[in-house]
Amino acid sequence: MQHDDGLTVTLQPHSARLHVLAVAGELDHHTAPRLRAVLDEFTFVPAAGLVIDLSALTFCDSTGISLLVAAHQRAQEAGAAVALAGLHPDISHVFHIMGLDRLFSCHDTTDKAMTALQ
Figure 1: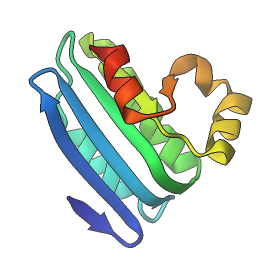
Figure 2 (figure 1 turned 30 degrees about the horizontal axis):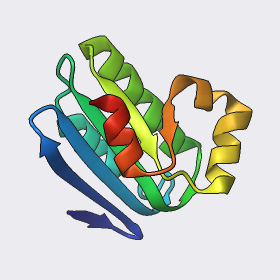
Figure 3 (figure 1 turned 30 degrees about the vertical axis):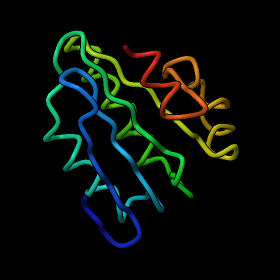
């Protein structure tokens, strides 16, 4: 678990091909380096998946959104998948306005996201 001024990032393997990354707190330009570091160290492999659990995320600015989009792009390039879980309604609304709900596979819960990626 990594904690950085209001942001906690926890990467948990669920299986050899599926990991869950829990992000809690506020994701903004001050805290984004913590998430960036974890995502940069994560290796996407073909046919694998990463669920990003955002159920405890209380705020996300454009820096955070950019990190999530970059992770999605890296996954696609590797033949892997990223799914988002537990988006707060306000954050979900922003994703919808930006069209990111068409880019990401979004699910109500981490369990539903894991099932979709298996």
